[in-house]
Length: 107
Image (cartoon, rainbow, N blue to C red; front, side, top):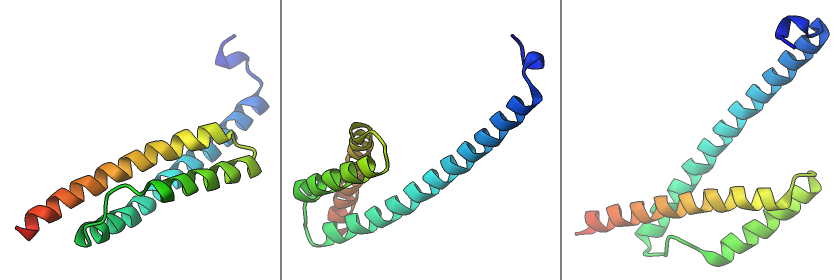
């Protein structure tokens, strides 16, 4: 079957759904950008006060919180946890980089 054989209504519905997906993807990217702006500020605050880049207690509570939000939203909690773990690892990496840079500034 090629695209010429697909009903025009199906093609229109597919285009509408894909437009929505594209809009959601854009929103996700913008929300992640805002989140990382905040976590960068946290990284600078931690570095100035010699706090560790990672906070295992906070991370565990955030994972539990996100898993519950995912369940309530009918999203696979394991997927939500994997996503948050990926984000947390990136945040910690940023915090370590910030701490290293601010440590150099203090010298």
